[in-house]
Length: 156
Image (cartoon, rainbow, N blue to C red; front, side, top):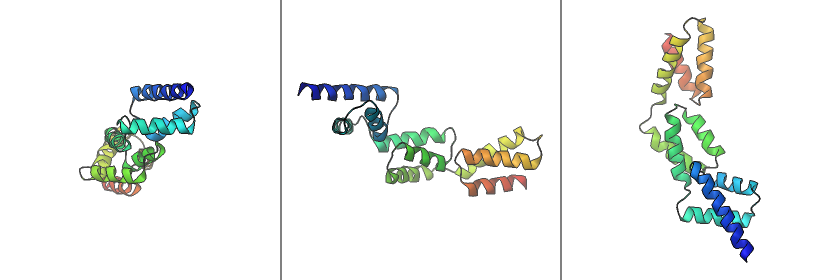
């Protein structure tokens, strides 16, 4: 019995070590514990403990992640993809994104970024400038439709 308690304590200590650096999702904690060699049973007990004591909360994590990534700024598509990779449930992602979209204008952000980029790249041929800005905005996760509209509007 002592060995199980020791394993639980070791896993808990490791989970707290991970959480000391930054908030984490359940999936991240689970993967890191698995990688350290802890059994599924111990991992599940740790996750229950962490959830019950509010050390991990995927909804809160998603909210904070979205807010921080919008400041970069990154597009909604990229943020959604990052949250999916972090193991956040799609329903939570959609809920948090919908809350944010009430006060967020992707078109406004894309227009700002595109204007700055056009100024920076004004010495290049227009086709090359357009392609670079288009690719840059798509890599940042902005909607293809909005990027096309903004670039067309700015070129007119």
